[in-house]
Length: 220
Image 1 (cartoon, rainbow, N blue to C red):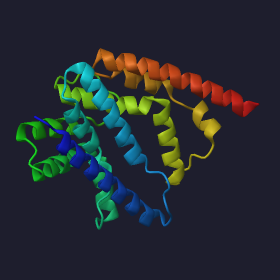
Image 2: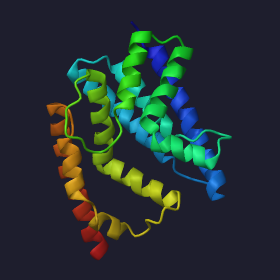
Image 3: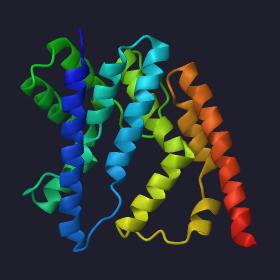
């Protein structure tokens, strides 16, 4: 089955929902937001998911579809009360899974694949866990989501996102010095596949090296 057109529609839907999310945040903060963290994280996760899928025997387009839709529950809904939007985010796995399923059904995506995507999105929430996800798409989506956070690009995405939304992180040196490596290792150990764990090891080593070089440059 050629899933390319379904993937294109999922990508466009995710882009639109991320844009709506930024617009709603701008209303709350009463100022423009210049960096769309949610979209950049989603885009990175989709790229990683496709690469993992090629190595794990999962249909790459299906993996990317799940990744494009995985954080819909974190995207604010225009016209929804602030409290309701916050409740959506707190339960974003299940909320996003249902929104993704409804969207996929609206474009006549195969029902069996819709259920796989729904399950994967519902199970991706959190940073660490003490068990392995057995369903291939769910395992892959968890790994792709976490790998996007472990890379230095992911760290920068988070930092810039915090700055642009006014969350208070403005001291880059303090942020880099305070990176929680124990948490990073916990995330690495929670990955489901050996391929993802090896990928994480490379990302963590690269992130540590870049961090040390940046801190050294800041001290000069």
